[in-house]
Amino acid sequence: MAITSATQTRAGAVKTALSENYLDIQNNGWAQQYLPDLMEKEAEVFGKRTISGFLSQVGAEEAMAADQVIWSEQGRLHLSYKGTVGTNTVSTIELDTDIDDQDVGTTHGVRVGDTILVASAALTVQCYVSAIDVDTSGTQQTSATAFITAVPYSHEHLDNAGFGGDDAVTVLVYGSEYAKGVAGKVGSNEPSFTTFTNKPIIMKDMYQVSGSDVSQIGWVEVSGEDGQNGYYWYLKAEGDTRSRFADYCEMSLIESEKAADASIALGGANDANELQGTEGLFAAVESRGHQTSGVTGVNAATDLAEFDAILAEFDKNGAIEENMMFVNRATALAMDDMLASMNSYGAGGTSYGVFDNSEDMALNLGFSGFRRGSYDFYKSDWKYLNDLATRGGINARNTAGAIRGVVIPAGTSSVYDESLGRNLVRPFLHTRYRASNTESRKMKTWITGSVGAVTSDLDAMTVNFLTERCLVVQGANNFMLMN
Image 1 (spheres, rainbow, N blue to C red):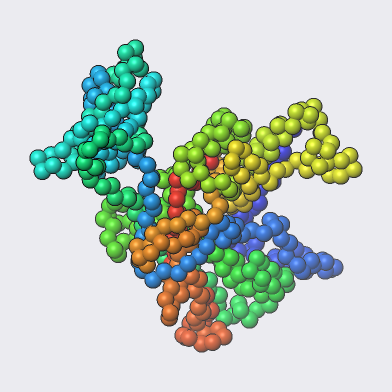
Image 2: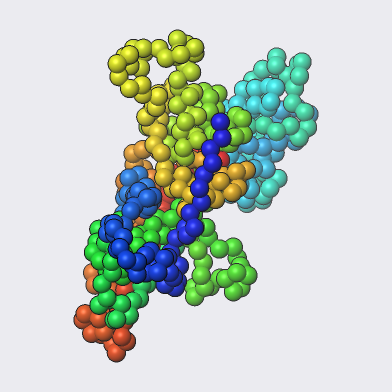
């Protein structure tokens, strides 16, 4: 079966007033002998056209009084490193990268006396750290060739296979051991953390209408999402501009990314006076979180195998039990089909009673959530990914790089705020906007011109909109982007 869709002649607002915006007297027959029957109410054929509300559901808003927001996230508690074996035995291990794939220019935390696990793809051996590479001053070496000397407790596993030169290994500290009467451990480990920053962007919009048009009544009663209604066309235009700007405030915090150094599009080197962009939700998850393209590569999370892979990634990180999934229509239906297929009695038809269904009630083929392992997933459609006027249209055009959903942890995180100098508990997502005791730039609106309250000699009314805000994505390692 094929579905043929009609195309709308005009998809959205334009800069100029065209004949489509007004009733055409000649073509609509107002000069005919018999007057046509005018349906005064404008038809809302697209339903609710706005997409904002996602961030308000999953996050919070908070004021800030600086040009940037800085926060720190805890490092891992236990010491685990990735390295390479320098010789054909396990006696020497050269550490070239740590668990976060950073150069060993920062001192590792392995010390003499530690007991460690050394694991390659084929072998795991318990070892004792007998020496750490140090420089002439006695400080632990921090160069890219810093190494640990580890002595295996048993050669039983090494007799058959052993480690090969340059084998990639993981080193995990699991304890320590000391002989009687020896001195204690030398050197202490300091907690590690990573600092992140983001900068707010200034967004503006405006709507202008002449004084003559303000005083002109129309034939059609207009209405809009912002609650405006009446027979004046400028009421709808101003309200639509306001609603569209509110959507921009959310879409910018989802889609934006920071400008690259010396970005040509922004005029060269980015200093304090340049446009520098801001890190949105998608960019933060792509750089610091996880991504999944699904087992089939078409829809993310279409079977339990893909969810098991997602669970494995979450187990390696915060292991947050409750997660919200905001997905497009195709992915939502694929998840419903996946969960329905778990009912073996429904393979050849509807199974009454299993989903609290009976013969005399409407069959519910949708699922709002499920539990897998120790994780709860709650599914919700995200209009932004379905609406052809927003990201849904981009996904339809570029199916290979389409974003089909995002998994967001529920609850709060505790982080250290550099500006306030203390730990704060906040939602993983929250919006920061510029504000002080005298000025709030969360959503600023003002009117200029000579219509109504006179502020200038311009024979028009200008409605101005402004905001300055950014998004803070804390613990992005607990987020999953569905591609």
